[in-house]
Image (tube, rainbow, N blue to C red; front, side):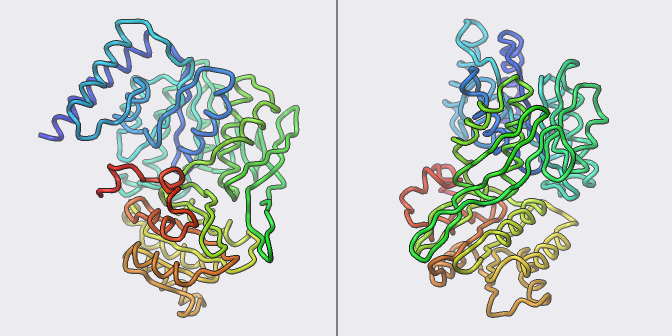
Length: 433
């Protein structure tokens, strides 16, 4: 009965969304990829918000129900029948009566299972498509026949581009770059390592200094376009991963005709996305890298490399949880993280059954048993970390949604009362799970 109700709601909202798009004709910027969709969407919004009436997907509204809700400008009603009725009535009002409506929609498009993007692409015709990073082993591969099947699914969005549209690609990822062959639209690339249209270089962290403690405060780089070189400085986050995020926003801004100066100002004041390499002040003079929104092999690799290369006054500690939805690739992916962890941290804490493989491989690769703690769950991990962290330690916390490692962040953050404003999954619907 519940599935039938959901299908009916999705069908109604999709019809309303189509009619609203047909009536108001907003420009659509669709963002997809296996890593970095949400933070890229937020960066794009930040770049455009001062110059146009823009709406973005809230949180991670990227599904068959989240996309129509964004178009309608309505919240998820979860299990409230009254809430869904209000959403539907609001859509009818938009269709029947002309109201102020955004000129641009920035929509996050996800693919949890085969057909997700294909179905959306049949009625959504974007003006710009941004593909962040697919990688050799994408997240959600468990529900697809192979990584190539995910690539084909992402390609449906590229094929949905308007004839005069623009395809923006992360030029450092081989799979993502290959999407350029799927369209005759204009293609613009961004990246760090390869020769792309828009490229970042000289990437490094900047720090704040206290008494005997040096803590990371943000990341900065130079961004080169065809005509300009800009200095970009982003506070509250760290690592190359967020530079890619900024580059996605930078590239959309250039395509939309904004100046490099305007774009760097917008990105410089960007509030970094919750749970995505966000710097949080920890107890006992520590710093937390909160990367707890979700996890995948590419994202864990980037996070551990960031931990490895960041200057610290104390120890580098990695709390790594299960990577979910990897199917047959799960064991080897967790082994690879174990081999990388040995080179990246002084203390390793794992959370979850799958992550035990990380601990075992790290030990076999040379990390001492005294430096490894295998936690039973997130509560056990939080208790252990709280008892061991000391001034100057840098603590990376990363895992898939179901491991709920944001609870570890809350346990060791200096001001846990700020959790509702800083951490992921703090609303009532998540707290009861």
